[in-house]
Image 1 (tube, rainbow, N blue to C red):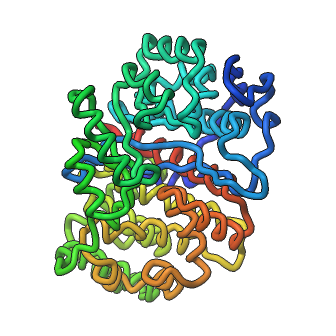
Image 2 (cartoon, rainbow, N blue to C red):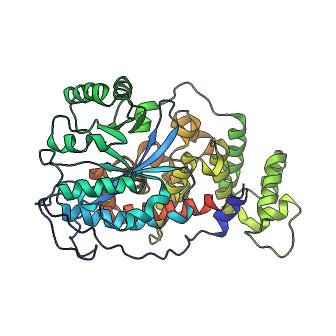
Image 3 (spheres, helix red, strand yellow):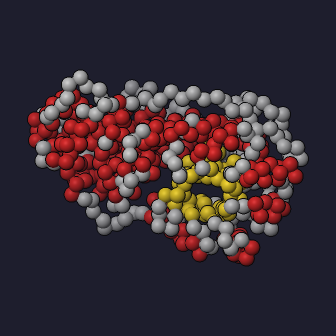
Length: 457
């Protein structure tokens, strides 16, 4: 349980030393090229720009990789297809990802969606520790890559970087790159059913052994269709694809932890809380081990549950139990991607509300953490949350998407599902911008990775 101890000893993310990466140099022979400039000044970022990080899973719904990329839409003359804008977003994204390298779990992969104009970025070589696959797409499939760009792509492959090519059947762009693909991407948000059928037939005929990833899935029917097209990896709205798990119930252990958290939330006397704790010997042992861990650095050891409660206080005990409740149901403990995702939401919401005196940071943290309880336990949200008797603001946000905490939860969810209009509205509601909110997402991810990477064994 050392990782739980560190979550309380290190509530501030470690300082990150990062150097701003220079933007990718433009490649001659393609439109809208610009002289290299510093990344931040190369193009002004509109309010509608952000980044997205979603998850890729297999047929059995097991986590495979993160899919990460820029997320922006046209507005007031702003062209998201502009290589200059995309290079700026990609350069800032690569900088954020480089901060994750020291703590990235071995064997975990990312799919990094980049603009073709960003392939010469010097930071790509340093990202190899993240086990990346570069996802190449275009908004101008009628234009083939220039010879210099093709040579650059071939060089990246020789350096060991994998390439995933988004399918644009019967276009010069796709024809020039198809033979270089280590994986193909069928984007259900871009292709109509006829285009998907045509893509499936093309791949079955020309590239039957090359893996296929389906992105933008929004329904169980789309998930089944993608499987029929030969896809083995999938990205989309998990809740829509696999929920809502009607008829299932929570475990007795979950109910015991929930009861204890309810007693704390009612601000019961310490003696009453100690009485509930002593009913669960395993929980009492974990609590004593946590309080006596090196992370808390106490001068004298704690030998009793009552002393442990005095040392921690009820507020910290509630947060510790919240993390324990979530992590004990995760399949792989602190390294389970579901637990990490919940931590990222919790930390992100807490940090977004830090300068709002009317909001409770602990309430924001717990709301973010418990926003994935239904998915973790595979029970409807009402059944998962009812035993906890959360504060009204948290319940309103989690069950009805209402109240003062709701826009913070919407920010966290939109950074994952790519819903840019919702992210824009939610960002405005909390007095921020999408690009700043998505930066908080990656800072929270770095924090969560730091916690997990230091877990012994």
